[in-house]
Image 1: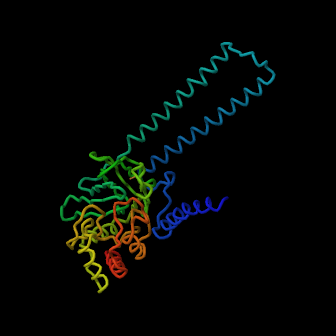
Image 2: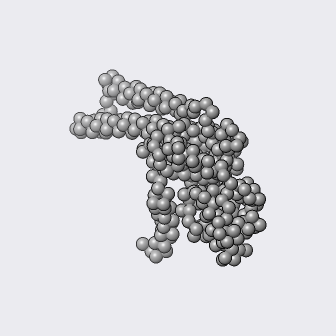
Image 3: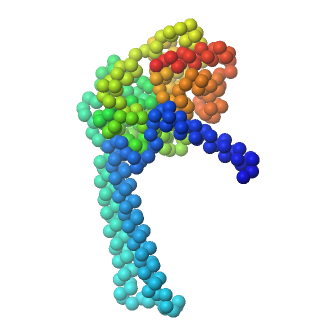
Length: 343
Ligand code: CUA
């Protein structure tokens, strides 16, 4: 392999390896596999997949067996002697039309019954999460029946284990697709329309998801994390999310907060409890508690936050956040410390 090809392969392979490794090790997520279900919706999809794989395997073996029998039986027949006796046409119509028709009809009926069972009705007065797709991140509004319980977060959903959660999907810009393979099938996220999906996690865990509809330059970096917590732990998380952003706890984070609120950050981001009330970018009130930053792009560390603030275009080219060359090294460190302290 030429040095250029080797270098370009390394250039693409390295970020992919880092992304998967950071998700597995730091995020504690499991691989995104439809065939490893952990939710009610994903269970049905996995059963359908195995049924289809089984049917396809049987058909494949039967077709191959028929072909080999035909080859063996007709080895000595002259090449131009096509045999169209009634017995043979019956075999062709049976094997070429009737049997495939029956198999396809059965697959259709099973597929439709599973599609029909897609939504799982949540109990009345339950939590509804409004998920809004943005280029290239996810906004999540937790819409409890009581107004004072509602809050907004981004890129990381928490849901209680064993409770069906209603998720309403819409988009602020282009068509995205919400897909957390181990929990549920994918569903389009369409501007001006609302789609309805249920998430029901059977086991506690961290489930990675991905935008599944090409939505522009950073479609591949539009990840989402769904954390399924035992109900008591979920309630604790929700209570924490309701609180305003943590107050600065030392002089560095205090300076960081001043820079954040007085600078361009506040125009796009919200930190509840401060004058920063921008709605263009993700709500950062508790960003320090999330597993990743940049919608699944990097593990959430002080260094990655600092690098992200300095030049998001270098890390996620095309993202809507501009580079911030105006900050000094000290201001960057202070900003990153403040953002990181927002647990
Ligand atoms: Cu959003 Cu692809």
